[in-house]
Every structure is written in C-alpha cells, then in structure tokens.
Amino acid sequence: MKKILIGIAIVLVIVVGAAGFAMLHRPDIPYAELDKKYGYPADETKLIDLGDGLMAHVRVTGDANGPDVVLIHGYTASVHTWDALTDRLKGEYRVIAVDLPGHGLARTPNGYKGTIEGFADYVDAVMGKLGVARATVVGSSMGGHTAWQLALRHPGRVEGLV
Image (tube, rainbow, N blue to C red; front, side, top):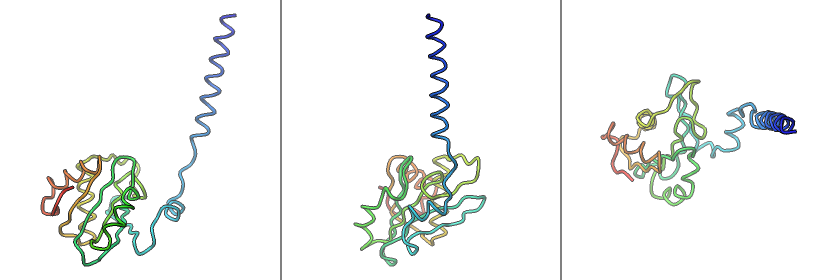
C-alpha cells in the first residue's frame, strides 16, 4: 500500500509540474504589442539605438528649456515607476525616465548580462544621445546604485544625486 501511495504521489508531482510548466511557458509578446500597451504618447516615448543590439527606451517630457532630471528605476521596475513624480516635475523640469536594460521596453541582445557599471554607462550613453550635458539624477533601489555609479564613472554628467 505504501508503494502505491508513493507511486501516486510521484505521478501527481510529474503531472502538476508539467501542467505548471505548460501554463507558464509561453512565447514572448512582440515589442510592437508591448509598445502599444505600455508606451507613452509618441512625443514622449523615445527608442534610442545604442548599438550592438542595445535599444534604450526613455520617456522625455516636461519643460524642454528647464533643468534636466534623469530618473532611474529599481530592479524589475520600469519608467512607469516615476509617473506620479514626473507629473509633479514636468512643469518646471525636463524629465527623462530611463528603462534600464532588461526592464520595461528597453531591448537587449540575446545573452546580455547587465551590471551596475554597465547600467551607469548605458545611462551616460542615453544622456549623450539626448544632448544632456549634466542633470540631477534620481535613483530608486538598484537605480540608486546605478545613479551612484554614474556619478563615480561619469562625474561630469551629474549635477546632483538623489
């Protein structure tokens, strides 16, 4: 009897495991569909080609002549983290919210391995492509670590650090 119960338990684990894998394993959603669902209006959304298959997604809004503020989200987040703050700042500042590689609508090549130093260089490259010489940089969690590394690696870019 004990062997039968163990056999049934093993079969159940295999069946439940296979069903769970089948339910969770699905194809990626195409970026065109994600862009429509999660993007911002065309005048605020920018995709910036940084080369080597790396494509930055940023939201740029606010006063084009105001001081620049760069917002960097934390782990597993996106530019949407900053929507409420962006709404408060955009009347006085040009607000640039950056999706880090592997997050949000940023595109990365197969096999991309992100590091904090790499994220800092990525933000530096985005700032360069947008013509941002210096900015106040705001980071949350992993984005705070990235902002700190940006200040260490590219001190000329950082006016202030939050």
